[in-house]
Image 1 (cartoon, rainbow, N blue to C red):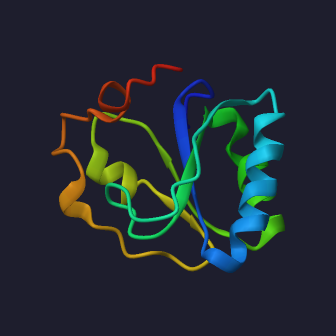
Image 2: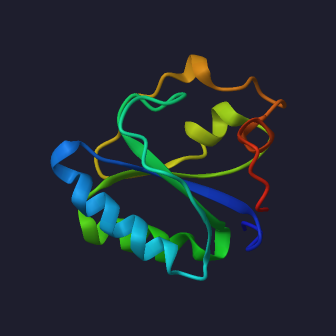
Length: 125
């Protein structure tokens, strides 16, 4: 069983035609007290993500609600825990909503050295 206070991320993907729906969902997440952080919309590749996306941070207890909100939009997303294994977080521990996107796993940290939060200067967990 997952610790309800375990940190999670969701990467919301969009193409130019889906950008308005992605922006509306981002705004909704920004008003949701269960969401700890909403990142900026990145209209191109970033890190392992080859297409436009943004991320939201939340606790495991909110995963079902976050996934339900994403599913309602028809957007694609990668939902994953934040552990000390960046590769596993984005692959074997991840859950896809909609059609998966092929990630550039060479951009991920090696197991045991997850620099995600320190690298981006965000410490919300």
